[in-house]
Every structure is written in structure tokens, then in C-alpha cells.
Length: 67
Image (cartoon, rainbow, N blue to C red; front, side):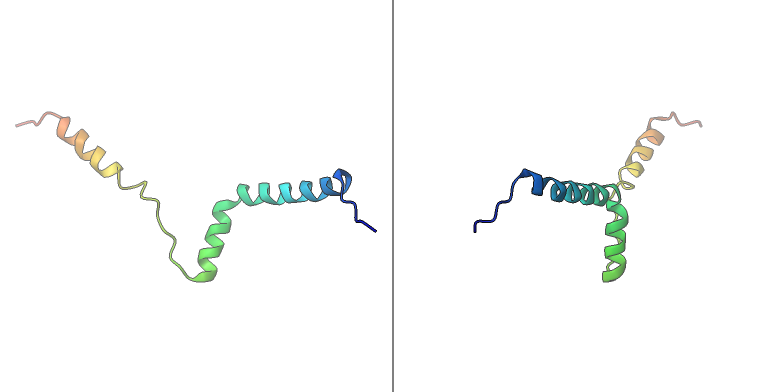
């Protein structure tokens, strides 16, 4: 006998998979933090703090100096 897998059997499975992927994406930062904590790797910074320093220097350079 040929096994029939139709849309009525696949829809519940795809709904559960979609829900799991959505929850994974919602809590992605927590999942990655947990992964790094389990593996013992240090959490890498994205470097978003580095561009702020040159901007602060540029704004300080634009201010007129008082003598």
C-alpha cells in the first residue's frame, strides 16, 4: 500500500515548525548567550561602541577654543 501524505497531514507539522522558528527568532539573543555560556566562549561585541569615540573627537574639534 502506498502511503499518502497530503496537505491535511502536513499542515499541523508546518504550523508547529513555524511556531518553533518564530520563538527561536524572538529570543535569538538569549539563545546565543546561553550557547556561549555553555561552551565557555566569551561573548563577542559587535563593535557598536567604537564609532562613538571618533564622533566625540570630531565634535570636540569643531568647538572654538577659548584663550
